[in-house]
Image 1: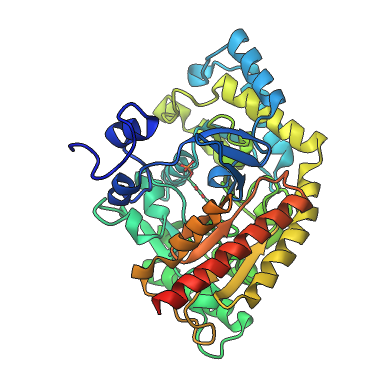
Image 2: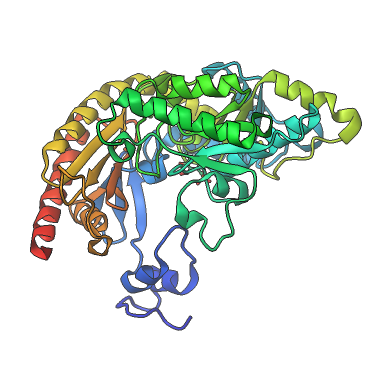
Length: 464
Ligand SMILES: Cc1ncc(COP(=O)(O)O)c(C=O)c1O
């Protein structure tokens, strides 16, 4: 492409160079060429500064990940020490390194289920790709090669690689990418506010969803369905908090047909929902689990897939037939990423971050719930330190705004203007601050958000 369409940035500025050189992930590329980037320059605690010196309260923990906040000297110290001692090593061919082994031990000890083995990757997407492959591999090894289908949910977000992007249930991640791949199915999500039928109670609603899942499994043939994957609280799909009892009913169906539960804790893991794991908040008994993001507080990329020992035993038993367990990444068990993640988990423990997050989460949820009174807010929902408000044109009818109005984006921009980072998911505004946020900072967050909402109300009134 020639020069950016319109921009006033000096040619040698980072903004202009960005516009010339970078292909941005999950970005409206045409808008980006018009508006230009915002350049993040430094960050400390829950605050971030752009290259014009403007300060923002980080209301989204980056991409739901910077749990311990920014600028933690202890993590920088550990990274430097590990880089000096052993900057790289690997886990292929039976080699190992101390940080990875100790991290695996630590993770297993934290788990809310009987995890046997830990497989390391670098992102939530690769973790969920690994989940799919391990389910397929396992069922081939135990002589059930037809048991391959994975049921995900519409509105789910599990990543963007070929398998995880297929699990994701958001149409833009499929369209023109030739996804989803075969063997991935999507069932309804538990968004009571949007999906409940006229007169349906929460209990009726969750019973219907469990029945629909059962009908899907039966229609496909239970012998063909390997696993169900779920984020305990759906994140990028709009911070959807399932009604009480939902997972109990879903698990009863899965149990009946021998379908495993892949628990995607990439957002919910490590204190986000008021407990160490979303599984505990929502009452899930996982078969396997994916973690990433807060695992290292996003200081370095790392993910992990935890599987039960019986699955590992099947992999071991296959060695005489297959030779190597032929799955792994160059950076599986990267010693620097592992050392930083291990120290991040230790800091969470030493500083009682989960208890802090649960306590501040109460302030956060109270302020969030109060936003339901705002004329624009049709629904305010959340758990712990994650939440969202859904903006509607008519609260009684739950009528959405004309998408051309870009109401969510407008509100996000107003919030930015007031020095608050939130994320618009259509007309849903998501909030997910670092877990170390204080009550006072929660106040600051909501005061800024309220101003942005008031200005957005004025905007939609102006636009008629
Ligand atoms: C629940 C969930 N799973 C998986 C992913 C994918 O993680 P990554 O972007 O690290 O590939 C995300 C990312 O937001 C996520 O929210």
